[in-house]
Structures are given as structure tokens and as C-alpha cells.
Image (cartoon, rainbow, N blue to C red; front, side):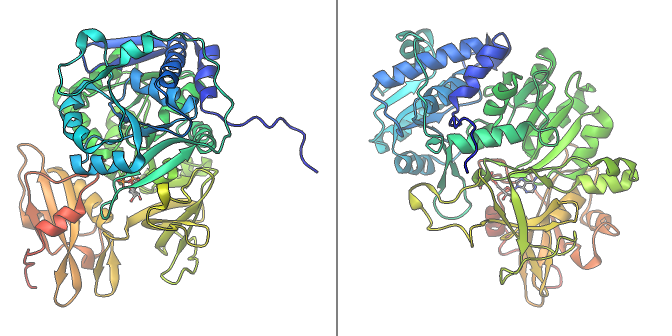
Length: 540
Ligand code: ADP
């Protein structure tokens, strides 16, 4: 016997429609590329998304056509999210920080029909265009007054939108239709497309709002620092309208001073971004001797959040850190670290240790860890193995079958090595390819980096395995010091004593001016391994 409830499909257009009806005067504030602050409401965003839907239809965009974007976080980008998915097309956010050759590959692989770009990216677009013949039109996301001169025949976003009425009814779409596309910046091989559906996006958006997830509500002012081209800004452009939170978009200015200014002027309560972004922000706040007036919590993920950063946010500034783990293939949320009631009675030291974990799975994400033979390992907080996940917002196959069947027995292998404890808390010990194999045992590069980051002179640390004749591999620590700070190799190594097992202590330290990052802000360890391949460890 079937249940007798309505079978209305989950459609993304319902989010912006709901926000319009119930939170019509709630603001969306954007720092624009042209300069200055743009301010409007959910009602305005919904109206203009409908105008855009008419414009796209007039351009001949059909269901399932991919609409590419090369754009910062801003209101026009939000309109493209809803305007394109709402008519059954696919919003394909492209990461402009990738190399032009990678972007060319991605745009061609996705077969983007139109590409919408912020003015910042005009030089990039002019480079791409000759190699992306399938793109029928390049749309500058600006108004007539700011249209640049270009070798290309550009379309103007505002002209397109303004030429059409807002008289548009969102079609009711099969909830399993593709809604957006995001390529993972995989460190090896070609980027692979993760193709989200309306259903997966809505379920993920619901889950993200839960109190033990991002805890979003109509009383929040959300500023996603994480770009809309990186896994849909972790779903915030969908979750915010779902609850009616005010949205603040920082545009291209992601430096500490610009962010803090927006935090304060717009009374931001919740933000989200990768650790490298917060490094710059915290340095600025400290140098200026200021704090955060309204910011209550910030989501930190994408790579391990150094414990020192959690302590600074919470103890010095009273801002709760939500340490989260996810992947492009997980839409991206998998786990978030929040306490259970009994943890509130734990000692401070115990609570701090717990916070360094990546957190508990949100309902909708099932997790297990397995050994090399695929046997499930115990959830005891000690055994570590390959982390597998499954759930309705997790990839089952990459776009156009790239890379073959990624699943193992119906589970998605994350490529992360982790522990799970009896409370369901997961802790990443490493990416499987970054783990250091020393004398048949594994050393966690993340643990060593976290320990190094606790040193008062260290701005950023990376640990990689260096070939060793006796031990196979031994850890090498690379350190970028804080401005004006000084320390020695010996002092650095001594700092690890008592913090990690003796045999984990790195064999050597190199001080560097800069550490390389991927286009999504993670340490680029492949590059570091290449650069330091010939490094001779003392005693090796
Ligand atoms: P890419 O950089 O390949 O585009 P993603 O942004 O999807 O990829 O990155 C996913 C990976 O980032 C995870 O598999 C994990 O290794 C790492 N990661 C994400 N969040 C965390 C975290 N909180 N702690 C440690 N690693 C993390």
C-alpha cells in the first residue's frame, strides 16, 4: 500500500519562490565588481530570476543545456543559479582560479552553451573564447554603462534581463533532473564533473539548516566567503532562501579588511570558508586590535581546521567554529562538529580535543571505514581506514561517465583516511595519497601540521613524505613564518615533543616564503612533493 501524500517534486525554483513569499523584504547585499554595494530583496531576486528565465528561453536555451559561469559571489550569480536551474537548464559554475587550459577543458567537456562572467574575468574569457567554439554567447555580468571594449562580441547581462518581463511560471520539473554542475579540481588526471539534481540539492539544503549542521534561520545574516564556484558555496545560496536568512556577498574582495568591514556594516551572524581565508582575516583583526560585533559562528572546512584557529576564534573572539568536512561529490556537506549534551560536562581539554575532529554525519550521509581488503573497521575512534559514504546527495557517477564507475559496492570512496568513534564523530587522519608511510606504519600529515600550527611563530605549515632508504618515507616539515617572527629548525622540532609520538616527529624543517595552494585553497602537496623530491634528510 502506498502512502497517500502529495507527490510534488522537489524543485529548486520553489526555494526562491518561498523566499519571495515569506521573506520578500529580506535583503541580499553584494559588493560589486564595478565598485560599491548593491542592495535588494528576495522579491527582487525572484523577479529578476524570472526575467532571466525569459531571457534564457529567448536565447534558445533548452532543458539540460549547460549555462557556464565565471563569477564571484554576487546577486547576478544568484539570479543565474535560479534562472537557469528553474527552467531545467544546468548551472555550471567554473572555477576561474584554475589554469586557462583546465578551464577550456571543462567548458568544452561540459558543452556550455552560454558563459556568464564577471568583468574581472574578461582577459581570461578572451583567452578561452578561441578554444571554446561550442559557446554560443559570452555574457558580461554588468550594465550597459560598464560594458568593456573587447575583441569578442559580448552580450550585456542587464540588457538581457531588462529586455524581458517577469511574467514567468516556473515549470514543474522531474526532481531527478540535473540542476547544477561543478568539476572537482582533482590533483591528478582531468577534472571530473559532479552533476547535482534538483532533489539532491533540496535535500542537502534542508539538512544544512539543521541545528547541529549550520543552524541557519530567518534571524541569520549569512556571508558565504566560500565561492559560488566551489561546490555551490557549500549550498548556502539554497539554504539561505529556504530559511529566509539575509545574504551578504563579498564579490572579489576576500582580504581580511574588506571582509571585516562587511561583517560589521551588514551585521553578519554566520560565515563559511576554507582555513586559508580565515588566516588572513584573523591576522587583520589582530593587527587592528578589533573583534567581531555580530558574528556568532563560522563554518570552516575544505581542509583540516588547525586547532589553533578554533581556539583563536572561540576563546579570543567568542565566535563558534563549526568544523565541517565535505567534498564536491557530497554537495558538499558530510559532517559537522557540534557537541552532544553530555560533552558539555567534559573538561575543557577533552572538549577541545573533540573539536579537532571533523564531526558527526548529518542525517542523509552514511559513513563507514574499511581496511585494504574492504573489511569494515570498528567505530572505536582508534582504527583508521578508507572512508566510504553513501546517501541521496552523494555522486553515483561523474558527468559523461568520466573515470568509470566510482562506487565500491554502492559506496563512494572518499579518498580520505579516517577514524569513526562510537558517538559517530569522524576524524580525517589524511588524504590517502598524503599519508606518510614510515617503516610500515602510517603517519598523519594533518596531525603534524596541526601541531606545528600551534607554534606562535608559524603562519602556515605543510608536511610531506620524503623517500628514506631505511624507513621508506619520513616526514619533512615546511613552514611559512608569521611576518616578523623568527625561530630555528631545532626549536621547531623540539616543539613537537609531547605533542605527537616520538617517531612521528619530522626529520627536517625547511622555512619557505610561500606555500602553494590549489584552486580551492588546499595545500598543493603534489607540487611540494615535486619541489622537495631531492631534499636530503639528515641521517638518510
Ligand atoms: P577538490 O579540492 O578536489 O575540488 P573538494 O573541495 O571536494 O575537492 O575537497 C574534498 C576533500 O577536502 C576531502 O576529501 C578532504 O580530503 C578535504 N577536506 C574537506 N574538509 C576537510 C576537513 N574539515 N578536514 C580535513 N580535510 C578536509
